[in-house]
Image (cartoon, rainbow, N blue to C red):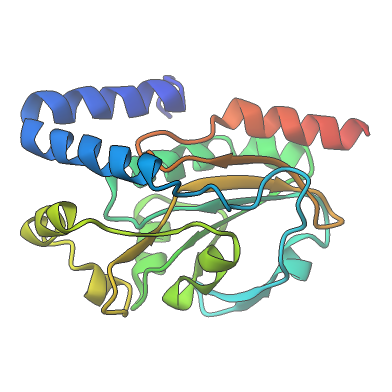
Length: 219
């Protein structure tokens, strides 16, 4: 286990990219600025809203419903861009590292991306993920949460050069991605806390997840 916090690991990634791949880092800066100016995520679900009911296919082929995920306790639901994203990989491993603590507080974890073609099971195996990895076909659930954004042309060219063909990875010709977001949802379906950040280089800290779960348990 990496003893550094998720925030520290993400900061290290940002520093590495700025140092080793400055052109990519600058393109990401411009993408994030564009998303902020366009109000990306402004209509996303927030704390106090109700989570929409859903059913998605898990990496192991099971059909998983929101009712099932909430059957035994609160749900930690995290939307990530894809296992190809280094920032997402870092978040997934942080959730893995904190999974026992989340379970001890009665929580259940599920992560969601638009990836298709067995990529969910590959990510689960590569990172030894002990929770459900769900496939959001055509980003339907991300859209219901108000999280879908279009990848700008400049960044699309970078991803294609790096081999990240999102049309193939997500099984959809439109270059859309979810805004990374994490929700802690109470058993009644109400959202207890939410982290919605158009700057995909930042994620909800596990300490905040644990604090919300502790609050729900004591209420």
